[in-house]
Length: 276
Length: 271
Image (cartoon, rainbow over all chains, first blue to last red; front, side, top):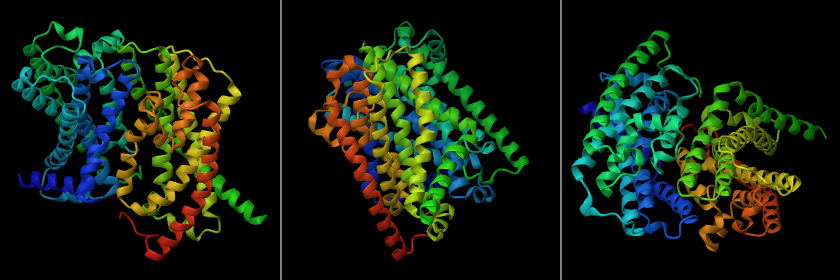
């Protein structure tokens, strides 16, 4: 517990101590707001009043939730890269009396906190500045909370896979997280229904947990589906699918990380700097 | 004459790293093409989902290609002297007999070439995958618009190289901060005129904004009404920006060197 707390605090210090807290808060707000405004402008050039459109509101909400996906996936995969290449502290973490997975989980909590902060900013911006047509009385808090917990756990599992791969590869660390987040953004229907994707990608979309997570998040807030493909499925079915894929991802993530860590130790590359 | 030859060699050597060494890792070439293409694909599907005209999909593909240049300016140009300081090479540049300006020019030239390979791949793959048709008004004008935009953009990058030097570790966060807001203000994924005159004019301080708008006007004449300013105004402005940024970059470089020597930051690592 102490190690978890210490590593979370370390992650927070690394992420924020380069500037004044007020400036950091501004930094944390500018990027998510810019992303939402890009989406608004894109819808705005085609639709007359995108702010009144439930379609845009659902896309906005999906984009908001996806911020957590990107933060966790990229955040976890970058921990190894930062500690090994930039700060060269990974060997000291390894010889400290804490498990590296606990240390990584602590660092990941920082990224989760940053992601939640961005989500909060985007929610407030959407509700009070853009005046999006969200109906709080239709919100199913239980489904939203369950989907959030399962989704975050799934992304931590995925992040463990990427962190493990980072341990045994050189010169691809930063791109792993970005690439995976990019693929997920394309296929999970964050900002458009997966119905517009080609058939092959639709099949992929239906199997990944992020799609279920976003669909449940939308249903919890708007009370309706974003995609025709999921309209026939109940909340229970989607939750079950999400829970099952989360369990699989977390287990596979742990196994892959352990295997990669063993391989990195055998090859003596845990702290090898490749100057990316 | 001798110093010219020396500086030319320094510029060539610096460009060589960017053109040859960076492409030795072929997986980087693949990922630097595929990653932006993923983002482009997502935005194309947004426009398809809302029934936008085909030209907008072309706008997104061109904008996606230009993100490669902007990211190159941010991470390969603006951050470069900082990376060199962190890795211990900056003092070598300072004590070498070559002019630092020639090193910057070499960096810019090399980046332009290697990034153009990636941008071209994004454009070709994008137009092929999404079956978007181009109707180029004039290839000569298109080449001119593209060339002027790159000169201005990398002139800005050369100026930022010196300025970012003082930000230390915060420069990495500043570079990250200048991604999405610039995509927004420069209209990477939508016509910049939709931001309204004031914001579009503010975004025009970046050469990419007017350059990209001019390129779109030349590639999609059917969407000429989506242009922010008349073509010749945009080309003239971008050309003037190029000259201005080159002059400013030389001034910023002298300023950086003087300040860094005075404050003892030339060899300070990870701060």
